[in-house]
Length: 489
Image (cartoon, rainbow, N blue to C red):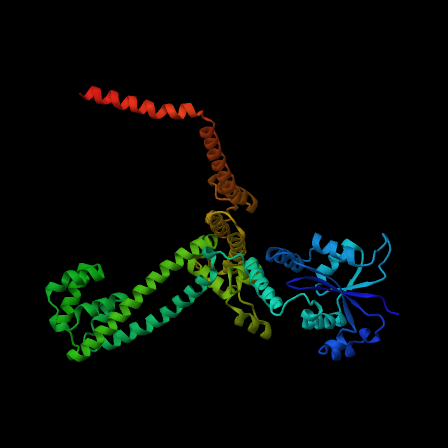
C-alpha cells in the first residue's frame, strides 16, 4: 500500500488540505486521474476535503500569498498543517507525503514540520482537478465569490510586486529616446527635401546656411528672393546670429541664378518650412525633457556616460532593471549583437564595443586602448545603473561624477602611466559626501524624526503652560496697546 498523500492547495479564499482516498487505487495512476478530472463524481472518489481555513480579510490574503510566492512558512499555515496533519516524531521520517504546488514552500514545510513534501506530475494533475472543482468542495462559497477574491487578490499582488513609483518610470525614457531617433531621421529627410525644393528658387542659400533648422527659418523669412531688401537684415541677423552672413545672404539674393517661382508654389514651400521649424523645435523640447527625465531616473549613469547614450542603453536592454542585471561584459557589446554572432560563427574577432562607442571616452582613447577603456567604462556603467536602480535616497549624481573621474584617471594611466586611485578609496569618499549632504534614506528618516520630536516637544511645552499664564498674555497686550495710544496723544 502506498503512503498516505495529502495535497495542499492555496486559493485566494484560504488554505485547503485534501486527502487521497487510499481505497481508490485509481489515485496512484496518472492516466486515470487525468481522465477523471472533468467529472466531479469520479474526482471526488480520488480526493476528499480534509480541512479549510479561510482568510479573514484581503490584507491577510495578500500577506499569505506573498509568503507562498517567497517560500515562507508563516504562522497561519504552520498552525493549519500542525492541526490537520498526522504528528511526526522527532528524528523520524514521516509516514505520509504532502503534495505542494510550490517547491520553495515545500522545502520550508519539510524543514519546519519534518514531513516529506513532493511535487510531481500526479500532484500537479490533482491540483488541476482541485482548481477546477474547488467551489464544489467548499460549499460555503457563494457563486462568484471565488472569482471576485481571485481578481482582487491578483490586483493587490501585482501592485505590491511592481512597487510603482511615478517619478522613476523608465518606460518614459525608452519612448523618448526612440521618438528622438525617429524625429532625427525624419527631420533630416524633410530638411533635405526643403533644400532641394527651395534651391530651385534660391540655390546659393544652401552653401551659406549649413544648419537645417536655420535654413528653414531663413527660407520662411525670405519667401520670394525678389522681395528681399535691407529692411529684413535685422531679422536675418537674428536667425543666423551673424551680421556678415546676413549681408552675404542679401547680396546672394540680388545676384542669384535661381528661377522665378509662382506665389502658389511659394505658399506651399512656406507651409512646409513652417512644419520643419515646428518639428525641429519639438525635437529640442523632447531632448530637454529626456535630459530632465534621465536626471531623475538614472542620474549616475547620465553623469558617467551621457544622457543620450544612457537612454539608448536602457532602451536596448528593455528597462533599467534589465540593464542593472547585465554583467559589464554584456553592457560593453550591447547593440553589437549581430557583429558578435557573426564573429562567433566565422571564428573572427569579436566586437570591442556597442552603444557605448558613442561615449566621448572611446573617441579620446588611442586606437590600441579603445578596447581596454570600453571594458572599463562598461564596468563603471554597470555599477552606476545598479546604484540608480536600488538607491532609495534623493536622486543625485555624486556616484556618477566619481565614476567619471575614475574613467578619466584610467585614460591618463594608459597615456602617461600615472597610477589611478583605488576603487575602494573613491567609493568611501563619495559615500561620506552623500551622507554629509543628507541624501541617503537613513539620513532623511533621521531628519524627519528630529523634526517630529521638535514639534512634539513644542506642543508638550504649550500644553504644559498653566491656563493663568495663557489668560494673562492677552491682558498684557491690551495694556501695551493702551500705553502706546496714550503716548501718541
